[in-house]
Image 1: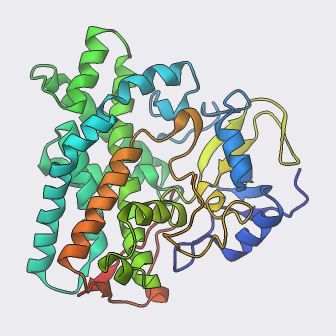
Image 2: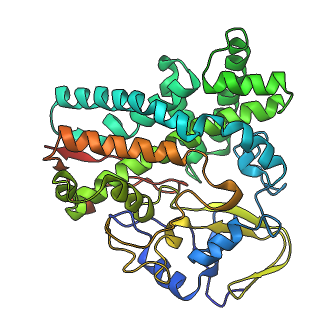
Length: 392
């Protein structure tokens, strides 16, 4: 066991979206340490090399959910997130089809159209506006719903369900179970209707794979649909809001407006410095093992903080400084190994297009509140400012 007295985890972020300073100091000395998690004792893995090691070795650290876990989200079918190879490999191959480089390139004009429409609405509303509700939430939600060919009028329900799925401990067991049941029921009915009118959307292609090749079970189909909707939306919401926050808060916005820094570099530094999955990924030790000097027993719960790994001073120069010109590469915002995020190309495209459109439309964009006055979500796997008032 770690010699460090267990600290509670997760902990609120700073006003700039950085991990708790006390936690960072402990992590600097102990890249693997015992913490008091929401479900009891657990290990927090925060060193970059240690996180990579865990993500690359499912034989030692399994993604399969502990049978004792009762959370309806964790037990919600057989999503690939809770699988190890070879089952994970089979489902991932099917779900990856919409995220090829060719298909993402074909979607760029569509994303630009969505961004432009939302900025039109912002301009008509007039300053100040809340960038979270005006842009960060609706853009990826509309894009994902278009990919799945889901009705626009149902988007408020999708938003509510996905927020419950990403909340760590701020919803009751009854609320979680209810949201899970409603979302899966909706997806089941939608799949039934779509079978009678197959198109070229993601959902139709998944149904073809399910029915034509018997490549996945009905439960796997529904779980994959839920995963694509929730993960494909919520992570990008955080990336957009936190990206604009750090650009405005550090003064880097003016360099982006002036063309003094490449958009691709800005996107990658946002993903590193403001990693959307800040609380952590989850694994369970499959065997007794050692990691960075810590003795971990089979069955122990493990949190992997990719955000803290992306701030590891052993890997990154001056890691807490937002610097799009840094030369170090290899952040873990999208994970590593077999579970590397399928939607990484789409997320990068959405973030880059959104920032580019904002720069062109509102070059004088600035915060309409002090950083220290912003309220952040808490106890979520993915945290962001509750609102982000901006003016121009």
